Every structure is written in structure tokens, then in C-alpha cells.
Image (cartoon, rainbow, N blue to C red; front, side, top):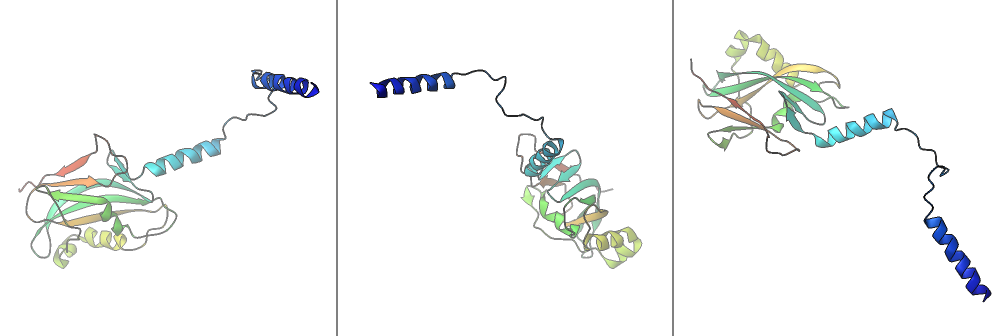
Length: 186
């Protein structure tokens, strides 16, 4: 009988404890969210969404690449070449050469993807256009974290026709953008 009373008393206490909706004083202090933690959480979320393209800038985990202009030229072998001028910013923690950014870009001509490669710009062309030689020198040297540089990406083309650029993106949706570079002979 004592065990039954003890058990019933324990059961009543458990039920009262489980249904206690009094939240006035739980004994736990709740603090407002930390600004530092909130900022860190937002940065982690944005980093996990990278790479993506927005406006005229392509964002990866370590770099921001803003498309500035393009031109069609003839390479040292007489083939048409698309030259894409970009402003490159190293936002990573380590220095590295921006020439590798080409790997994030997928170029298409007449529906076929252009194989990765770099066009060979003639010495004569570089002498006439010294900004090419300077930009190439910048592209092959390591860029320090936080440093910005103007570089170009030269894509060898199979023929004189339009080129479409697509980006490697983590966020895939209906409005993924591509850019069309029109080849207009003058």
C-alpha cells in the first residue's frame, strides 16, 4: 500500500511538472544574438552559396571577378580570339595567380563548348598594345589577399562567330545567366 501511494504521488508530481507552462523564470538567461556570431553565420551562408554570378561579377570562395569589356582580335597563328578583360580581386587567405580563374568559365561557340586553352598573342601585337603584356605579367604572378588586378582571358576560337559564356554556379535556378559576345566584323 505504501508503494502504491508513493507511486501515485510520484506520478502526480511528474504530471504537474510536465504541464507547467510557467515560463516567467526558467532560470536560464537568454541573451540577444551576438553581432559577431550573426555576421559570421551570414558569411558562412554566403560562402556556401558560392560560386555564383550576379550583375557583372562572378563570386567564388577566394575571388571576385568583374567583367569589364571584351574584344575580338587575331592571335599569333592568325586565328580569331576572344579577349575578356576582368578586374580580379583576391578575397581568400592565401596568395595565388589569377590565371586559374579561366577554369570557372565555360565558353561555347555554335553550341559546342570551347576546349580549355589560352590563345597565343603575338609579340608584335603585344608591342603595339603594351597593356596586354602588363596584364599578362600580373595574371601569372601570385596576387596577395585583398589585392586587385586588371587581367585578361584570351580564348582561341574556331571561327569568327558569336561566343556564349556560362559560369560554374552552385545555385542553379531558372534565371542562370549566360553572356553572349557578338562577333561583328567591321
